[in-house]
Length: 342
Image 1 (cartoon, rainbow, N blue to C red):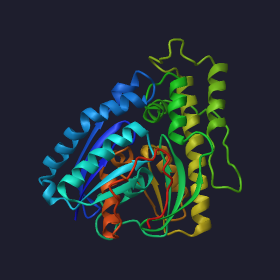
Image 2: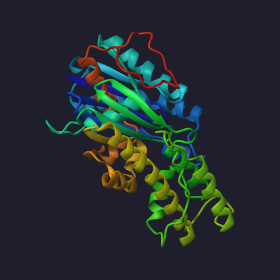
Image 3: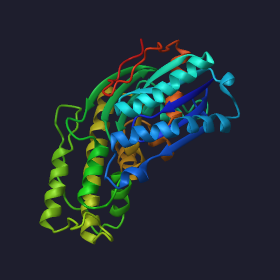
């Protein structure tokens, strides 16, 4: 069964054809990183206008690379939330038009469950994730800890009470003048650290929730005290002290995420622990989780961690197999919560 996936929740326009939920036949991603880098973050209006320009060419390229036309597609899966309203509407309406015109079922996908299903991509038979599992979704907009008892069966255990992990990376990178996106910038600079700066951890005892606002503020204050804030907003060549601070921040985030995820996995006796979302590309976080997880630990390939349509198509396959489709009045929901399929 082949599913065409379309993703446009933020600043990537993506389309992909995935077979049987695991084999990527084609995957095309048009990124807007260079466009938004000058602003230090994603500008919603700019993002939605760019999606309008690129969505049809991207879908055409994905179909061309797959070697099949719409007659060879069994369904069209599209992100309808959460995300930026204007961006979501572009991909959603394109998917509706394509599905309706081709007479194919429409499948609505929550962007966060799409990230979870990135863990099914490129897996051989027998290598698929095992239920019940615990998944940490860490991205620019979300930090959620989700128990998954089966396909489409989700229980939200905890989430960030303020900044998402990826959002904290972006804000700290902006403060230090390291550029956008912040995650890769901080990880790159941290490699040159002599010794990691000592920064606080917010553990929020007796809860599975997270908090990174205090860590962000502590990093800012330490940067001010050490005179590390760039005068013109850009660090042309980060000083060793900047690398130390970046490393300390990265370690604090990774330690909290890994420790709280491992504790929850141990308490719930899950069969597997998964990592998903853009922050899953961070090597230190993967290392910490691998060291602490009480169950087999898995994560997507780095190219599948950031927003892409293959993960949306993968989730769409399992939904369609279960007989779950969307009505033509499916709408974009910027704050769409995780919910079980029904």
